[in-house]
Image (cartoon, rainbow over all chains, first blue to last red; front, side):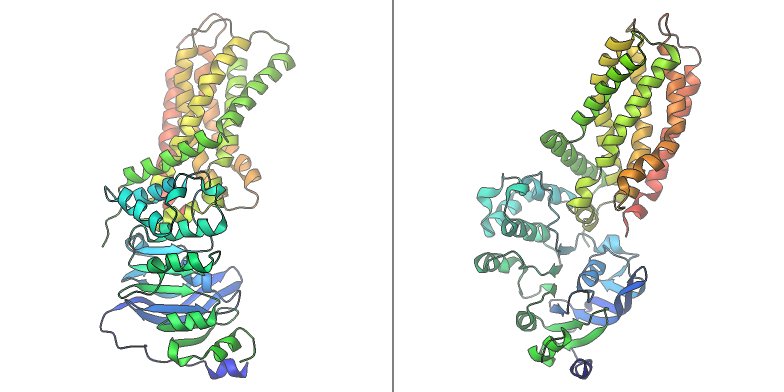
Length: 251
Length: 229
């Protein structure tokens, strides 16, 4: 644990940014009954940047994402997402967030196109919806499966559909929980333009791929088991070896 | 800031989705119909009576509809729970009451379809006269509203519980006692042996309507909180 302690430090942002933070957490705690999932997390993420979240199983990564997505209330601390204080102003942030979690959030007894049309209606997309849906399905090479029930699709296809669902309403903030799971390299490349790093795109990416996380993140938040912050700062300030040490592996 | 999707638009989307899934999978309504018809057969031969009237007829009909409704209420949020529908809806800029209204409306539709089939079967099995069926359908429609308003609340509360199959009947049945008493009170004279009479049913209809309005308002007031973690 000495290595872990050694990298427990705060660094400045990766690059100076004048805009207000897209995400600001101050002393965030989240408990599930007696168990603490997030312990005193404080960070800021400027707009247009990517935060990579690393940590072993049970470190609270998914919990953090669900708090940011307004799906979980913080137990204590202050959370601001896109300028909205959560949970009080959650309704203002909803619809501006694209969330891709472990579940695809698609109904198995609806077709791909029906699922996306349903989401489009919930998000208030109007006449532009059919064109947007066709464009997204085409981008992820799912056009020919648009009329297929989700229950008949492979896990990789469902994940591609879930990506379409998450970005359908052109969100300002993407919250991605292991977004490339179930995807082969070709499929991962297909969804990259939709969820990968891009100028002006604010993202929080949970990943177990340490090198990839460090490469695509402007900032890194590394959590230990129990939800304590092991590192928060610029991605350049954390080596892959140090990150592995947080997982309990050899540096 | 993006505008909130109108509640009516969200209501329409969720209701259309639910009805489409039910039409495609036939998971709730056929089970309700089969349950009701089987129950009528059991009463027909269990009571060994070729005709029923008055309070006994009302009791058989309403108890059957109530237990058939519980089959649908138990399944009302299955897709939302198992397939992430709760999260998907909460991530959208929609009012939680749109989900409440859509689910309650879907349940009313299921109950109306059930009754459209079960009521004639009930009449064939137990009634000498069909004259009271039309007003009886009106009483059932009012009772359906009460069942839906209460059922959707209890179903949402139970959805994330491991004991949900147990929780729904245990919590719901006591809450529905007033609906059943009022519906039975209104149905009894309509199913009288000598043909329907309408004396005294206004009072029971008023109680049913009051119950419906009360639970619809309770649902409207608390539903957003039920959807939160």
